[in-house]
Length: 496
Ligand code: NAI
Ligand code: MG
Image (cartoon, rainbow, N blue to C red; front, side, top):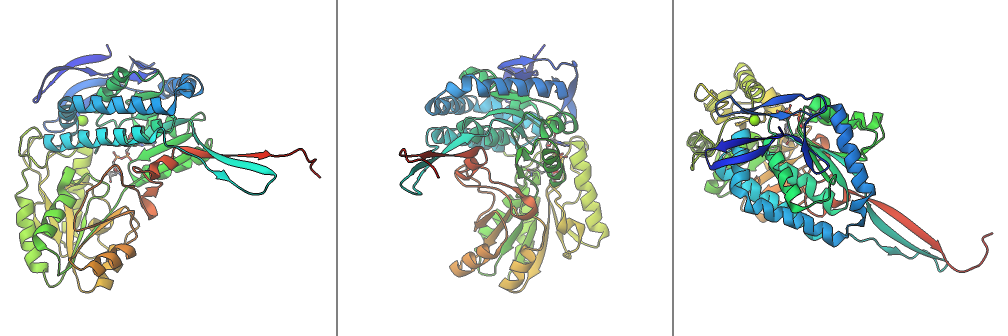
């Protein structure tokens, strides 16, 4: 069996694919292994999905290679766009199903999951529009030659995605890769394989030629590692932890020097000046850290507030955080569901204990919520010092620290006091402060008077140890293209 009938609280019965999607079909793994898919809201087993071994990765890569060298090459750029556009339409038509599957498997609130589906279809449609706008240049060097550059796809792309935005990361990866004419083998995270498989069924429905998009479920150390070191994968795109990002880079170096892009962790500062609109700043601070249960690579986990409004800010911010509705992801007004897994739950609770031991003060939260499911109260630490683990390391949960600063220079210095550089935010009504501070922050994205407002048209990625390359926007296309220079000698004069 490569599918199963499932129900979610928001859909009737639906057909959940469980196989590996290889060469346009759902198939079992060669070794016949499968693994449990867990519902993080109640820790129950939803179903089993087939697990990709190294051999299955090989089979998927062969399918992607065959498609790349064969049928896919003869598909016009315009038609590549049509496939993506059709897929985007299918995402929109299936928004309720895709969102419900995401909430079931990942635990995110259904309203947020619907937002993810919309952002995923927006991303696919955006890249559909790029497919027939990939252009080279003519470069004049001298009268004896005619030179031009051509942008060519890289080839077979391995893509490894995490569990925090399973469907959205799927779209971020597939969109630019397909628009530029590559073929892909994408591995979803072992914690959240379901939505990627439903999306694979939509790939089939959209009529993509077999082998162009292959979607496999499996573990990082097995299928993920096989992708990273595969000799016939030309490029790997990874989103996940910095630790694994380093391993991917090493594996690429140790195998065929495949191109890599990495989108890794963060410890992003959210800086609030005295002159900020305090109501807005509190709202964005709350959304900045607690959106998606803090499981965001760009989460605003270090909040710095200027001394003039600090006391007022912290009082109101903690009231706001405590009022966030934590509970059943399918509840209409739920803001925060469970963390994705036992491992993540334990890791976050470990950080909370560590913060307490180090002498930081819990302003609100700090505890498990309920006794079933991986729910954690929104947690704010004050009384922190810059060297504390909870201020330096990515927690990836609903936990932030808040501290005071005096001057603009202090804010910039502490904002940049991290090995990461994914995102940052500045709240101020002074235009000069906004521009000066955003210029000085070493981060791939700086939000002014907002937070987490990502958009598929805007490049996203990391400075420093937060990554290599950019996703989204026109910038992402570069990661999936290589430049060929063709230089034609003109005239019939003999050389030399
Ligand atoms: P992870 O980096 O282990 O997992 C992300 C993806 O990489 C998954 O698909 C996984 O199967 C794969 N993977 C794991 N080991 C691999 C290997 N050796 N070779 C190739 N692929 C491999 O992240 P994990 O353990 O789920 O979460 C740990 C921490 O990572 C989180 O607490 C958070 O700090 C960070 N993280 C950051 C994310 C981001 O959006 N930048 C997303 C997920 C996690
Ligand atoms: Mg799950």
